[in-house]
Image 1 (cartoon, rainbow, N blue to C red):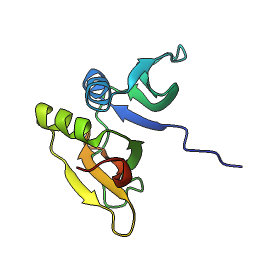
Image 2: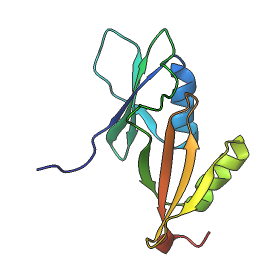
Image 3: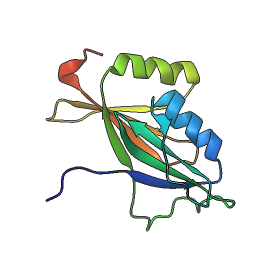
Image 4: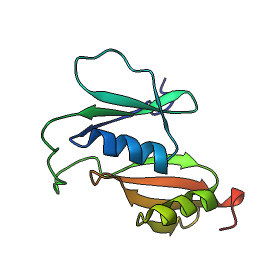
Length: 127
């Protein structure tokens, strides 16, 4: 039945800043998007549009304790290269080596404050 998570949809009043973050920091690429009558961008990873950004005039409400989506995660490789990008751009992050699993999470926030973590296999990196 289910195959995989298809995409994350984020509303933003900072459309270009969010596009820049997801392309410059995470390496996604802007790609084809239906001709909707509202601003936005679809950001692709390996041919799949995994992040859909929708431009809005008012900023989304800040985090609330009852908010259900706490974060989303993306698996990746080349943790050394990714950390170099974060350090060069001055983006704060928090590293978590997941106990009992060969996974290292790099937790960070996008320009709108959305929490995401990038997951790396410790088997493929020695950092």
